[in-house]
Amino acid sequence: MHPELPANTEVKESFQPGSVRERFDRIYHTLRDRICMLEYAPSSRLSEEELAKEFSTSRTPVRRVLARLESEGLVESVHGVGTIVTDPDISELVQIYHLRMELALLVGKLSPIPRSAEDLERIRALIARCDEEMKNPTQKAFLHLNMAFFDEIRAFTGNLPLREISERLYYQVVRVVLKMMPKLGLAEEFSAFRNEMQAVLSAAEIGDWEAIGYIRRAHISMSFHRMMAYADKSELSEGRSKA
Image 1 (cartoon, rainbow, N blue to C red):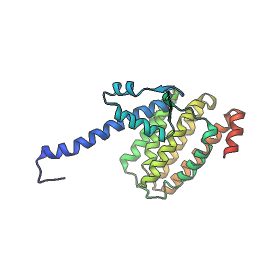
Image 2: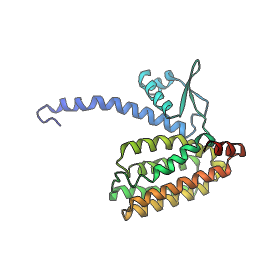
Image 3: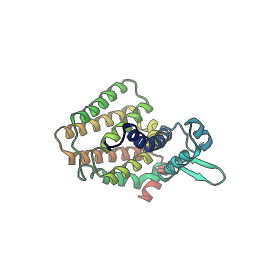
Image 4: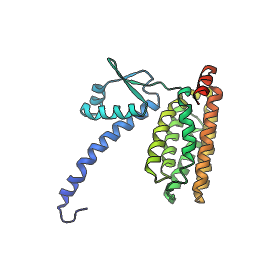
C-alpha cells in the first residue's frame, strides 16, 4: 500500500499487472480443463488464431499458455502441423504415479498449513456434492469433484515447489483416469473417492497432517493398481517394463 499516493494511482498500479496475469490464468485453466475433460480429444489440433478470437485477445498470451501446456505434457508442437493434444496412456505414466505416491507423504511434513473451519467446511461440501452426484453419476461430475478436492489437498502444504510439482503431475494423469472410467466402473470410483475425502476430513479435524499424507498416498496407490488391473495386457506389460 502507498498511502501517500492518490487512491486512483494505487488502483491503476495494481490493476494493470493483475489483469495480464488474470487473462493468462483464465485461458490456461480453461484450456487445461478442456483437455483433462477430453473436450479436446487426443490428437486434435489447437489453433492459436481461433483461441485468440474466442478469448478476445492477441495470439501472444495464447502462445504463452500453449507453451506452458506443452511443458506439462498436455500438448505438443508438431512442425508443419501446429499444437496437438497429446494422448497419454498408463504405460507412459507408471513412473509419474510412483512419484506422486512418494510426494503425497510430504504434504503433511513440509510446511503443513493448519486448516480453518471454513477450509474444512469446503471439504464437507465436496462430500455432500459427491453424495448427490452418486445418485446419478457422470464422468464429468466425478472429474470436477476430483479436481476441486485436489485443490484442497494442495493447499495443505505451504511448500511452493511441492505444490507446483504435485499439480503438474496430477494433471498429467487425470485424463487417463477419465479414459479408463468405463473399465473401472463409475460407481466404484465415486465410492473410493468419497472414502478418501472422508478420511482426509477426519484427519484434518484433529490436526493430524502427517496422517493426511499417508491417506493420500494409499488412495493414489489403490487408484493406480485398479487401473493397472483393468489395463490391456499389452499396456500392463509395457508399463511394468518401464517402472
